[in-house]
Image (tube, rainbow, N blue to C red; front, side, top):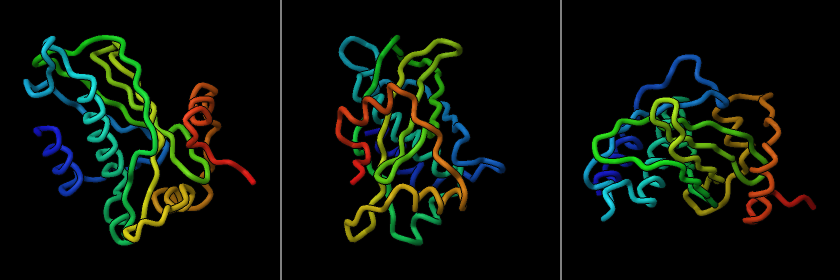
Length: 177
């Protein structure tokens, strides 16, 4: 419940926009492991990493100053698919960073990488395919969201091969034709 409240706060009382932040700039969120984040084995539960990632994406949008722009249009983000690879455990009280960055986009979704680290040690890496919906339930094309948040003329970087293969495998990638 604590992380749900944290996400609500990050969404409805977003932190100030970061001057000079672009859609391709990384967004860093600093967090600390709370007792409610732990499972019976006394390390962070795998599902809590997804909640951390939700908070990181909320901060990413806030860093761009995007909440006002999205709210004016009635657009909101949802996760279409995600995958996480866990490398190390986090335990009670440990501080860590979550770095969120956009890897690219297609007609349907925006692809993000979210990295959890303690110092230089990789803890977990998540890949997220994010989609935007309008309040009436209609899908908003990813390029329209990118234009709103970044302006005209920003091209998607080429997706890393592993992310492109994953997007095809989970059927979130744009299908031409």
